[in-house]
Length: 389
Image (cartoon, rainbow, N blue to C red; front, side, top):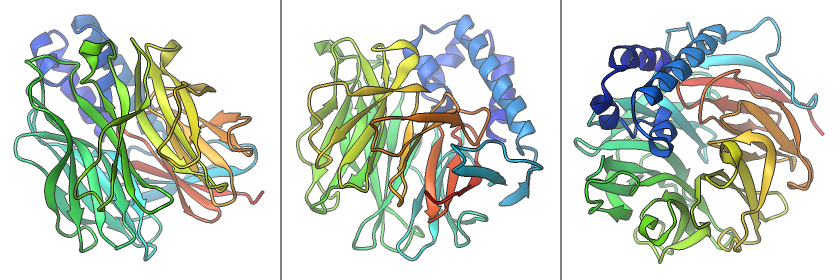
C-alpha cells in the first residue's frame, strides 16, 4: 500500500509548497525534490507518478493485504532471455524501500522503511525462513525525530548484522549512520556515524544519502554513499567510499569512487563478480540524459579509477546489480527493465523487469535457480525461476 498511501498523502497538498519542502527527503520522490526546482509543477508531476505507480501496483497484486500473502499469476509477467520467468508475488504489506540480505543460516532479513511523520522515519526489521515467501517482525531501528531511510543490510563473517542508512533532519543535520546486531536482528546497538554534515546552513543539496555496504577480498568492510557536501567545490554530488579495518567500529579517510565537476553521480550499488572483480552501478545525473545508469569495474572493490565507466542501455535512475552464482550479472533500475550480461559487462541484453511500475527496485539471488525482485515504493517481492545456462 506504499504507493496508494503516497497518492492519498499527495492529493490534498498539491498547492502547499511549504509542505513539499518539509517532505523533500521522502525516499520515493527524493530525486524529484533534489534535482528539480520546487513548486506546484513538481507536485503535479509527483502526483502523476504516484497515480501511475498505483495503477500498476493494483494490476500486479498490490491489492493483497495479508502479511506475506502471495499468488501465482495466470502467465509470466516477463522472461529474461528465456532465462528468468517471474511468477509469484508476495505482498509484505509493511513499509517501503525494502532491502534484503541472506544470512549464513539460509534465512533472510528484510529492512522496510515506515514513515511515522514528516519528522520521523523508522526502519522495521523482518525475518523470513522460507526463501522470502513469508515474514515475521523482529525489531525497529530509529533515532528519535530523525528520518532514517535508505536502509542496507550486511552480515559480517563474525555473524554480526549491520544496518546502514541515511539519518537526517532536513536542512539541519545529515548523517550516514550504522547500527549493529549480534543476535540476528532482534536488538540493535547504535547509531555510530560513518560521515556527517551538521552545518548545512539551512540549505538543501548538502546531504549524505544512499549507503551501500560490502566486504573487500581481504575481509575489510567498505561503504559507498552519495555525498553532496562538496557542492561548494563544484561537485553537486560525488560517490564517496570509506574503508573500515575493524568491522565498522571506525572508518578511514574518504575517497571518491565516481566524480565529475558539475555532475551528480549517485545511488551506488556494487557486487563481486564470479571472476573476482567488482562491478559498481550508479545513476549519472546531470552527466547524461535521464540519469542514465553507468557501470565501472574494479580489481579489488576499492580502486575505481578516474573514468565514468560505461552506460548500460535503457537503464535510468536508481540502479541495482546482482551477481548470480552462474556468472551472469543482472541489473535493474527505475526504467523497470532488466539488463543481463553473460560476459561481465562486455555486452548487455535487455528485457522487462519483474514489475511494470515502481521506483528504486532491487534484485537478489535467493538460491541457485531462483531470484527475488523488490520495488522501492511498496513492499512487494516477486519471485523468478532461473533457467540454467
